[in-house]
Length: 418
Ligand SMILES: *[C@@H]1O[C@H](CO)[C@@H](O)[C@H](O)[C@H]1NC(C)=O
Ligand SMILES: *[C@@H]1O[C@H](CO)[C@@H](O)[C@H](O)[C@H]1NC(C)=O
Ligand SMILES: *[C@@H]1O[C@H](CO)[C@@H](O)[C@H](O)[C@H]1NC(C)=O
Ligand SMILES: *[C@@H]1O[C@H](CO)[C@@H](O)[C@H](O)[C@H]1NC(C)=O
Ligand SMILES: *[C@@H]1O[C@H](CO)[C@@H](O)[C@H](O)[C@H]1NC(C)=O
Image (cartoon, rainbow, N blue to C red):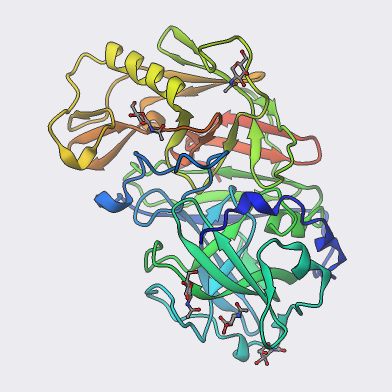
């Protein structure tokens, strides 16, 4: 059975847990993200078609191996043990595979062993928190077993625990965060690849790292600058937390976050998409669009649109590209792809969010799943809303200000952003 993070909208009792962020700081900090290099083509994990099952009301964050992930390095426990997790603004729980692992996916690096850490604490299933989690159940040892699922059908069965998590800032300083609630995964399906040691949950729900850090670093906000996957230079993407992560200056635009019952996703409102000079209203059948029809997700590579909108975008791109699309490659499925050594010269797309028109150049629009092939980095869902994926988020400094409830976009060459 797959559980989806949407069901965790009501975790209000998390605040009862003592969280001991070690120091109250007025300044924030920056960390580097590791971008997976040129994606390996793998049909099973190609993110561009048919990932979302029709029964879902809102699309979820799929997790894929091999293509399209940004990893964050952090240390867990005392003494610190290094892990690399997928940065995911579309889910809340931070987890890693732990010893003993009954049924874990293959992992290149050693796994975290809670018995070797002096700061590890089990969360009892008697605690309010465990009962409030829809999938929290009591283990025979009275520990809080917790199941967390993703749209890719990946699943982690964790024991909910508290630990010291230490981030390393870009200036080399350690940033210890004490008493962070995380999942010690003891049974994880193999939809992850062997570099990935878990997930860093940066969503808006109460169990997320962002919510747990709160305002400890001078404001509840963070920003990211993701380097596109098709960049040859080896350079890290960046994330900033707290004070100093404000996105300001020339070219900054912003759009309101939309609060919904599900607190995890960062919902924003997409009014329409332009392909070249052609404006396509998000809801073709009506002028009305529902507020918060998309969410920003660093854990999902493609942008996912409701089928009608998706088809109109595809039609326009097809009309405006002079080349003939590939129709004879079964690997590529139904996606719109072109045979070309270099990325397409256009068209330029614009995502018209409420109050913010975000330009998408070919580097953010077309991705190369295999040599000499470029495909539109969009896919579709039967749901009413969609996901603004990480291909489209690259080369923008994107700020999430949770105090002001705004998302900021500033065009940026993220290979040069410090
Ligand atoms: C809880 O998790 C532990 C460790 O994975 C497992 O041995 C136990 O069977 C689980 N219990 C329940 C009730 O799921
Ligand atoms: C956590 O729970 C497990 C199983 O009950 C136990 O073996 C372990 O010692 C506990 N760890 C701590 C630090 O209490
Ligand atoms: C691991 O999780 C899967 C999926 O929920 C379940 O079918 C299986 O029984 C679990 N295995 C163990 C050893 O707990
Ligand atoms: C499209 O508009 C109709 C009203 O005409 C509304 O019921 C529906 O929710 C809208 N769909 C989206 C995806 O905004
Ligand atoms: C995606 O779009 C294609 C055609 O463009 C359609 O056949 C398919 O059913 C759609 N998938 C979903 C999940 O809506």
